[in-house]
Amino acid sequence: MKLKLKLLALLVAPALALGATQAVAQDLKVGVTVSATGPAASLGIPERNTFALVPQTIGGRKVQYIILDDASDTTSAVKNTRKLISEDKVDVVVGSTVTPNSLAMIDVVAEAEVPMIAMAASSRIVEPVDAKRRWVYKTPQNDQMMAVVIVGHMLSKGIKTVGFIGFADAYGEGWWNEFSKIAEARGLKVAASERYQRTDTSVTGQILKIMSGNPDAVLIAGSGTPAALPQKALKERGYKGQIYQTHGVANRDFLRVCGKDCEGTWLPAGPMLVARQLPADHPVKKSALTYVEAYEKVHGKDSVSTFGGHAWDAVVLLQAAVPVALKKAQPGTKEFRAALRDALEGVKNAAGAHGIFNMSPTDHLGLDQRAAVMVQIVGGDWKMQ
Image (tube, rainbow, N blue to C red; front, side, top):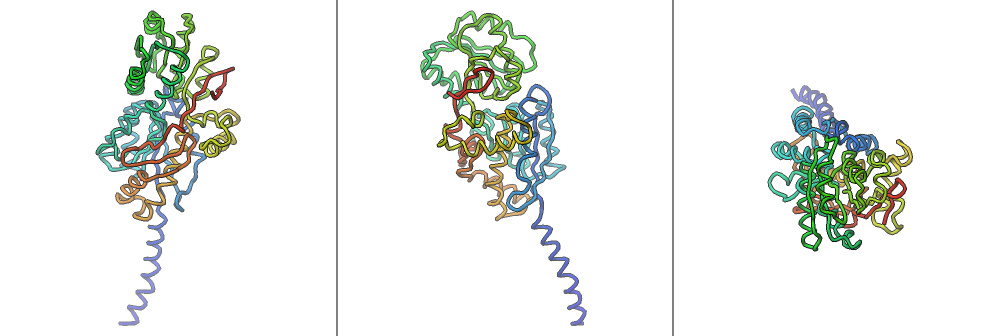
């Protein structure tokens, strides 16, 4: 009997060891939904491209990046999120590209208790950090942060009145809420406020209303190539005032579509957009150039986009948080997802393409004003001011 037990133990031990090894080696699954087609494609494509450049192992674990296209559509973004969680069993969701999609995904990840890192700008995605948003983080600078930069620049240029035109969705409304509040507090008068759809082909009516007030400047709160439409309409109608855009246009496709009509335009942007122009002692220069050089090595000179940088920074956050979460649980479990959520909230001094991330229980963005610079379009290119 003792001999049989010894033989059984010899047979079982290797099997148990193999099972333990497999458990330890469980892959980390990262589910991604990006707007690689549709109106936001100029934002989503560089994000998608970036996931081919990021580390394929984190914390010693192989990473599976499962990437889906939501076609810039809110319903598709929600569908993708449900699929990634229920079918692919991902440990974390990254996405989406635009604010409306990201906002719609919050209920899904909160219900499933899966952490999410958004690549869209609106502060509403992470504020306030309530029962649902405690599962949600993001990498792009808040509209509030960038609105402060714009208003300060306008006042420094002696601008007293401004017209506003933005997307008729959560992105445009978020910008209107933040910009109008800051403008009023600092004595800048908003003379007109208009909206348009991302898919519109004409904004003549809205532009005529704005120009009737003869504002010193106009702020266009759009993103990607659709943000060029109001600017071209302003130029066609002979507007001579100053034009501002948001950080939602910081890519080459916008410059290509807008062309000469964007010459002289001002916008706030992440320092990554002008990484090579940053002073040597800028705290983000080194980490920004790391991404810029990695992207351009594959896609060519001047191919980099700030939106791809938001995807890169999502993985920077995971690189900081995953090793911490692995001390408490294994990927593929509810316990690991909860531990990862907690670890993301504790990220400190993580240097990304756009800034230095310092998260907290009340701040799920973690960026400060070091993540913003003022840029002007000069000679069809970005020039740091």
